[in-house]
Length: 376
Image (cartoon, rainbow, N blue to C red; front, side, top):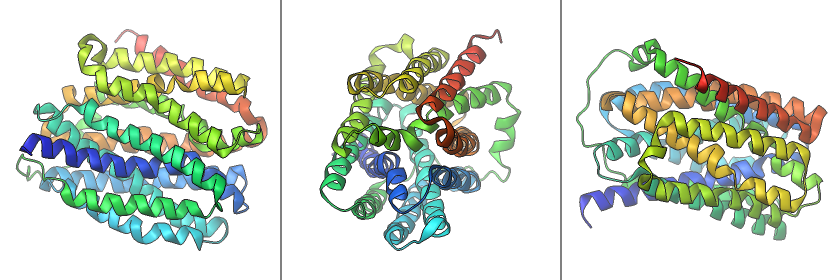
């Protein structure tokens, strides 16, 4: 196997491992926590802690990665730590115990995404891989996790979930050992690239818009499974709904390079915002299975277009030696601080409004569209 193929294969395996864990945690962890006696406000707080905890971890590791080009070693260390900690979920007691274990594991898992993406963007910029076709393996793994998780949890005790997640951490350890070190040499820069990135007006504007679009998914990730269970849907059906939502995402990742005009970052983010308005309003209005199945197809717009737009912006606006810092700043703000606030708020909103809380998510998508169409 030649070097580019090895590079793509090892990155694909890394994304498979990461998104196996993400699929299980997003689709089933909130409902699993509910079986341990936690209410929606407590669940939202625990999920938010993981997003907030990754912010300092993200920024420090990104600076270290940009200076020394050791993304592969960082990913291995995080995977090994998760493999040790995830089995402790079954032993953790009450809000404090679960908050401690998942606060650490969730922060490590969330931090692994921008580190892996920085490796992918560097190789994409150099023409060694096709980003979409490499990244789609993660989406496929997400589908497998939601389907397998729904099947296993419906036939076995809920405590099977930590074991399934530990298996994903073990795969991530293996995948990290196969990752190559980035081909470029270490930068040796002593100053934080974050300072220069934050001085860039276009980058700040991009961060705000991306944060709103990412945060519009908070109610989905935190409480969709619980909401659908209350509507009488089985774990298997819910797993199918989660899996279905990723099908169009995979199709878009696989074919995006055939539509170069689509890959302009503003256009992609605008599509994501429009899809969010329709999707979240629909979720607020109904739990009818046919309607949910139709609305879940919009995940390809609300997530895939958002993700490709963000990667396209970073690839075209950020130098190679600052890629990891840009990825982690985007992740720390859009999927860390702001998303954490939205997740904590979602717990309170769902506690009082139930499914109508999705209207707040639609509002976030609408505001992002207004910011995109404003004259620069």
